[in-house]
Image 1: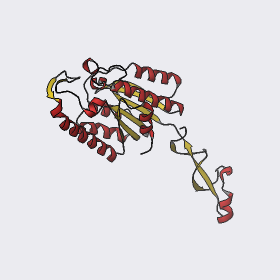
Image 2: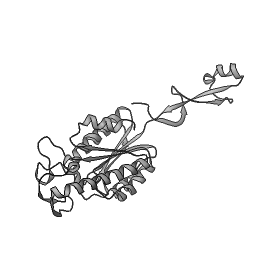
Image 3: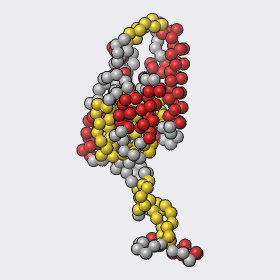
Image 4: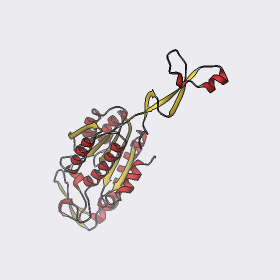
Length: 273
């Protein structure tokens, strides 16, 4: 993947950019003698430099990202299951290693609202180890405020960078988009990865259930059988509204479930739309 990012600066790589009229002092080795022979005009060939990018990995580490399903108490995962945050951490770590291998600078940030941790973009083996250690030790806590998280992080982004946002998107779309627009303004490319569990996309089995909000600890009693249709329609409308707005902002939108093999999630994320 090295050399995919084109610089606005003209240099001496192997990729031709354009012709320029010769002026005294230009390097004679870049004169195009074929053009001179055809048109009796001195021109030089200009090439584009390859440049490195800054890759920002921003993770929503709110308490809701600690949900892994209904196998364990309090939404904690059972055998063979992972939480949404654990799944996001593996994807982010994979991107960090890929970026490092192509000499891009890697940044890791996380938080529920206010950014709680931020590693500025760098490219070194020591920095990669620090980024991976940060991801490995990340724990879910705090109340979701994606407008604040995205908005605060936007101020730290370098222009022309690439940003990957990992979150379950459990917040009002208007608030999410307010922060997302600020992120997109600073980026060459951005992607939102919505991470959900199968029980969130298909709803819950059973009849009378008591649900506990992982962030506020508020409880509500429901009839799962009667609520399922309404829930699924609400989720569909929520997702489609965000997908449409991301399309308008030229932001890649990807929804993955925590049971999806990682290689497939990474392929879907990185393939061209």
